[in-house]
Image (cartoon, rainbow over all chains, first blue to last red; front, side):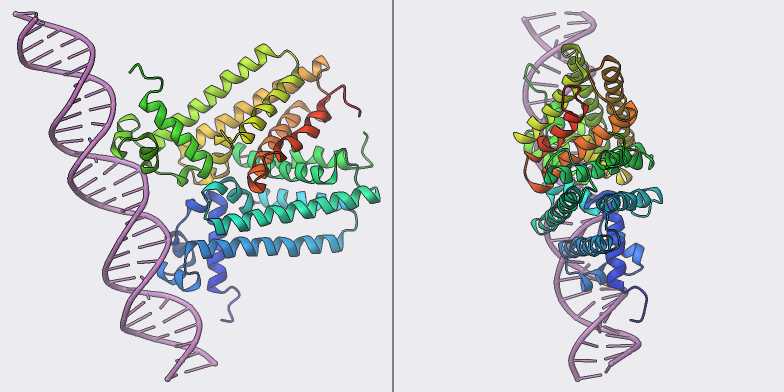
Length: 196
Length: 196
DNA sequence: GACAACCTTCCTACCAGAAGGTAGATAAAG
DNA sequence: CTTTATCTACCTTCTGGTAGGAAGGTTGTC
């Protein structure tokens, strides 16, 4: 048990990777078993059912995001820097193919077909992201670090949509560089130092 | 055979609806059979396998889009009107829940897990959309109907990303009105008559 | 016009394998 | 001696897919 990663964590990690590539119905317990190197039945000891597994995974994914966001707010005082760091994080993940897609963005696209418990967690993730970005927009506008052309809530939703859509385009085109190319003008438009 | 819709078309239509809600692995031949009102085995007469069915469906989806886009170009001379009509089309589809998500956007998100034949068709759809929007941006900029702040290609990709991301947010939040709310400022930014 | 040959569409009845999941044994550790 | 983690072995249901046949229409030939 002094291992770096517990079996439970390994299961969650492999499930996350598998979901990232094919969604909720795109993987099975057998797939996880093969990756982790245990038997299918052993997974049930850690997670009684697929729904439990994915619910836990999405919940932890959100909690990780909440922690990362808190850290970001702590080290970067400037709102534009925060947005740039957020976009840069995804640009990095997409470029090195380590986490080429947001788990919740993928799950959200198949939301109507998801078990309700998981759908609830996915919606909670979007509410969290939306609320956080709105607060960044509000503060940035107040402090003069961001130039908004709409209400903070709308700017936040538009920024989020831009990030998710750019992720999708990068995947569809098979060209990671499309992500930063789309985000650059979006960020520049929010910047107070840019030529308007 | 004098029926309004052939069985083959009914199969494609129900498959399209099912994919729109849960993606490639989110439906089965049994689901289609139930909707259309025939037996599972009868579907194989029209489409030998699931891959054939979905490949055909995506190909026709793209051809339909190509026709619709050609019609749009024909009836609307102004580039901004075209972009507004395109966004308006989706706003309508999402609001009345008739076609609440783009089939190719959903399939693109699960691209790495898709059979290669289908992945190819999905990529072709994105290439088409991208090329078309780039041409609209180029012409609009040339004719003064659009104000671009980046290269036409980048503006096109950003617009596309915005549409797809807004679709996702509308689905995730469960609020259709989020789609037009996100698109409105995006379109206004491109408008030459708007207050800059 | 009659009749055979054929084609299209759908059916019933299967099949093999994958899916998620359960029961109960085993082995190590506290 | 109980707890934890894993195993083998099994179950049920679903999955995409096949084989073969029935019903009905179309066509070609005498």
